[in-house]
Image 1 (cartoon, rainbow, N blue to C red):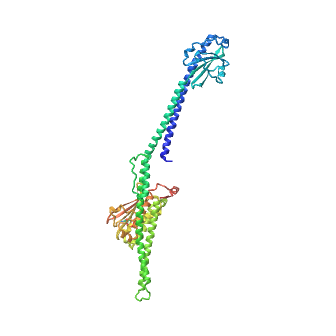
Image 2: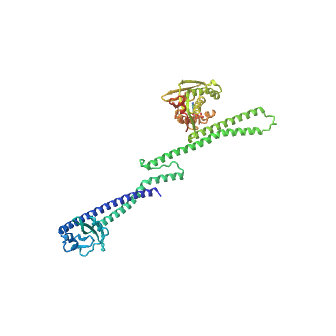
Image 3: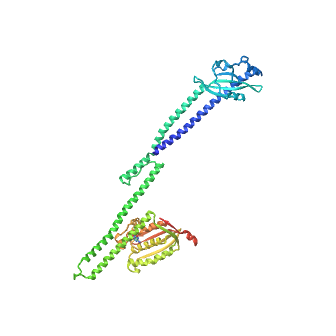
Length: 502
Ligand code: ADP
């Protein structure tokens, strides 16, 4: 069942129930009111006649019992137009009737005599053969505390019944018309309210059909619930589109990045195959030189394989971070100690990239003490990456300064170099995957442009960030910002330990 139909049905059912309840209440209170008015007026008439009869017989009970002729029915004709009256004895036998009754019979009803003998009033309604409705009201005739008979009033209630039937008919008709109107209006309103959902469905199916993620839902009323749904849907589309584009870019970048080392490996393998195919008996071949060439080719194959291996591990790590599966084991980390470790490692990096340890001057700047809550290995990885970059992009004779500042709740670890620097325009992109200001130079050092994006993801996983300040030909300063861990000591430190997945 569609929501539109469901809403219409609910709306109609609710309004219908309310109207029916209202009609039933109106009708029953009107009927009860009318009945009580009719019964009260009949009771008064009957009592008046009873009083008049009692006065006439002046306590002579026998008069009532014996002769109808001795009792004069006073002025009952006065009410002739709407009332008729009769005097009955305690056996229910008619003793006297008012003239206007003629010989119209008043049907008896079980229980009337019991009520009368008990001294109570009694009343009932009946419908005559002509279809007219009548009320019969009976009051006991009490003389000297003894019930000697009763006065019965018969009154036509046809007008009241007709009026009630009319009211009933109008109420039923009104309710039925209102329910039909409610159904029509409800269907219209539901259609109007849900129309934007059709737009959303259409847009979604167009996107599925045409695979064009650039489509957006155009709903002007942003404040309504459906408008907000459309807004959320559009935001989601933005995100999916960005992810899709990023994925396409990534696939392009990865295949491009992998092609370069693969081509080198292929070239070297082919070279070695050719050398191996050359007949050994040829006196012109310098075996030592061939062995050297083999060595060189194998070295290149190994270096490129390592590069590919590292790139794949880096990509895996980034994919884990993207999918929320990167594990970070949180524990208090003394950043000053960690910085000293990295400082010592920096010398080895200088040797690796520049060939000798004294090619660059590695210094320690401000050395505050600081504890952060984080994953020591991952933070170590970030700092080594920053130092490695500083070493790679600083020419011989340059200086690299490591510093640690603990201020305003932030622990800031700076890696400053006097290297080639990064232009303002390029600073914007260096944290993007595979971005390198100078591809050739980066490749020369085995870089793939993934280091900074990984470092940034790790910093973010620690609720931190990485900022860069740089000037071309003057140098760069990368700063890792981490929130300082709140004071903790002894056992309390253990409580800080936990693992988060980012
Ligand atoms: P790579 O593996 O190429 O070093 P990164 O993601 O670590 O990749 O760095 C991205 C790019 O940012 C580098 O290719 C380089 O152009 C630039 N870069 C990073 N650090 C420095 C630095 N200290 N000095 C100059 N350029 C840098």
